[in-house]
Length: 182
Image (cartoon, rainbow, N blue to C red; front, side):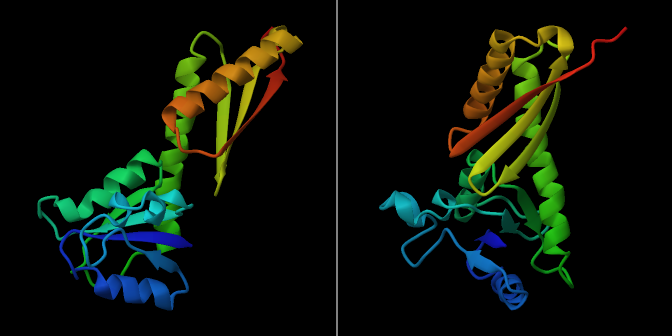
C-alpha cells in the first residue's frame, strides 16, 4: 500500500515508518527539510497528487494538533482514508485492517452524497473505489426504466460525487432497476 505518514512533531513516527517499510508498504511524507508542506512551492511534489491508500497521523494522546499535521487536511480534501496512531503505543495495529475501516467510512461519504442528491428517489447506492476511479451503482425502481430517467439519475450521481470529491479522476456510474414494490 502507498501510505502517507504525517508526524505531529518531527521524528515522532520514525519507528512507525520503519515498521511500515519493513512490511513492504511505500511510505511517503508531506514534510521535508524546508517545512511541513512539500507541495507549497511545487504542487506536483504533494503526495496527495498521486493515489494514497491511507494517511496515518502519528500523535501522542492528548497532544494538540500542530501545523506539521497539515497533510491530514490535504488527505481529507482528497478523500484519502485517515487514521491516527499513538507513536508511543507498543505494537502497531494491522495497517490492512485500519485501511479497510477507514476506507469503509470514506466510501460511506460518497454514498451519502449520492443519496442526498437523489433524495427524491427510493435509490439504493453502493460505491467502490480504485486508485483513480469511483464506481457507483445506483438501483432505482423499474418504473424509472426509461433512457432519459436513467441518464438523469446517472448525471445527478456523477454531479454528487464531483461536488463531494473534486479530485477524483474518473467517475463511473451504473444505474440498474429493481422491481417496483407490489
